[in-house]
Image 1 (tube, one colour):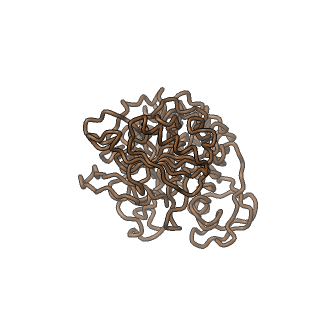
Image 2: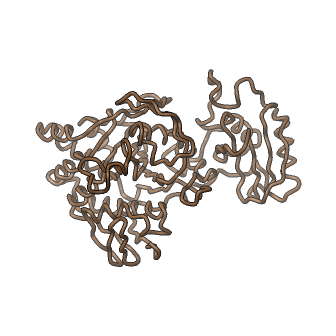
Image 3: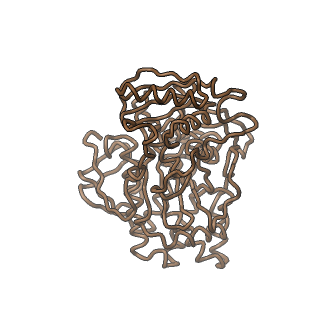
Length: 471
């Protein structure tokens, strides 16, 4: 449940007490540490926390063990617990932009094989699993590896907190203002609020963040919006009241938080926290973007899956820059690496372009467009490409199954289509170009999708949450 403000407060406190002896020792001994990865490989070099772009995965554990036993039986959360909240904090190199991506806990993703670094036990990959279960078996490092695999980004640090962190933080700041359109009485979370604006702290603050049936349509996306509004309100309170300039208040908050905190070993030191504090201390809330990872309903109505087109475009832009208005400049982005000795990316080893199964699905109702695309692919060496009829679709996309990532990127290049239209889909075999009505002026005229619309709100905006009348 820890959020960006927690990160700012903890690291600012570290800066205040870096040479404070007792407090420095107390804060650091409060914090538990764990390995950043559960076996995933890192392709980037060592990140310089002082100057490089940083990605910090913030996790909220639903564990019921220890001081959290009041929130249910310990068997309700297996292993290391599940991530009740998963947010990726993305800090630009120049510190001018922060993106906070929320991953719905019901999102179905492929969880890679992971090894618990504490016990040495290995766990097999789990395709089509809920993302909140990624850290259950092998710890937070497996959640990091999963987010890396899903987004193509590489997380530099993680921070994991439990239920207690929220209650203590909200008490330490004296409450957080939240707003609901109608009165809420939601038995499962225990949230009880009148219509309008209220100040919540302690158990009610936790209930607001955990409540699901109370907001929107009762699903996880409504809860994410409520969580983002809570964090924005907390950020405004901390900055408006000068908390970050009040050493006594900072220390009280930091002490409360760090007692319920686990970080990666690279962040478990005063110098590391001081470095990040220095970068965050002057952030304008207007430059903090809250984003819900684009999703669509899965076959199971109680689950979500990535919106392949929009999510693929968002992740491609973020791999390029923290600025969402920056276009993807390369013909093929870093997801599509060629020349791997083990043939783990691209078409299967020893498979030429002529052997790649390529279909061009016609969702345009334009009899001339798709034949021209097939001809262009034949000219590029994809001689097996063939057209097929398909239901009309408004948006063009290129989809590939496992082992055909590079082939899909080569197809995009041959057609002059932005690489942001490419995404994985294991329901097909090989590569499929689904041509939509947006290509009526030609595939080479397609523009990269505008992903700025994925921003739900910024931290300076005050919002009131729509309540679910059936919650």
